[in-house]
Image 1: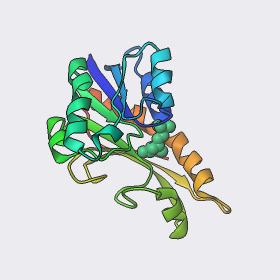
Image 2: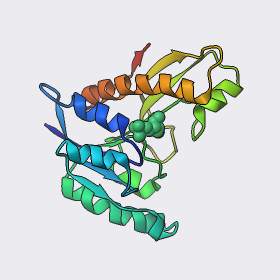
Image 3: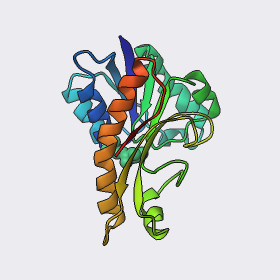
Length: 196
Ligand code: GRF
């Protein structure tokens, strides 16, 4: 059974989708939900489900990413995860941190990578007049949002869409895609899947 740690920064809806999927014959189980924000709603939700949680606030480190990550590593290493899932974790990790978990750290990104790495992906898709958008799960490498693709799901851009309405449609797909990819990845299958 693979041990999964999930890093979040906010509400944790992707974390909840991952946790809900890891039952029965799923080859993995959640062992930790950690956040850089002690007030993250997702931490409260994970604790209510009986999952160990940890919070390491990044602000006191005043931009010293190595020191922040050294503190964050303590609860993570104590949980001995086989796989790390970034699920709405909004801190950019250093290459040194990434190197520790290379090949076993995943991220969900709300665009059809390689389009729109970084932030504000839905507004950028609308501004470009795209007719479709979506989300991607990829392995995390030192290059932000550029690691090997593990899965994508597409949605149509509809007339009158705003970044919020499009974001909500994409988020619903995220909650399907990330669990599907994690199940395969935990079973050793890294071939990408494409949902529509
Ligand atoms: C998701 O859209 C994810 O793709 C992005 O941040 C959002 C987090 O949502 N990185 P949640 O915290 O999982 O609800």
